[in-house]
Image (cartoon, rainbow, N blue to C red; front, top):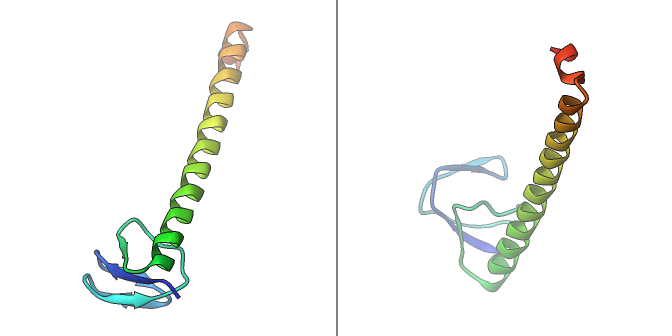
Length: 82
């Protein structure tokens, strides 16, 4: 099980964890969890990759909304929606 040092007061696995405590958990690591072993490093990398993928998806959605708004504005539809 991955081991971490917690660098900010956190609520993990249904308990309050004080800054500086070390814990073993399979929970998805947060940015303020310092991995203390290879399992923790691996989980941190996986969590960062998943977050990057989530943010990229949100950016694609934002771009699509912006493009749709531009099309509506060019067609004069946006004025009638306000």
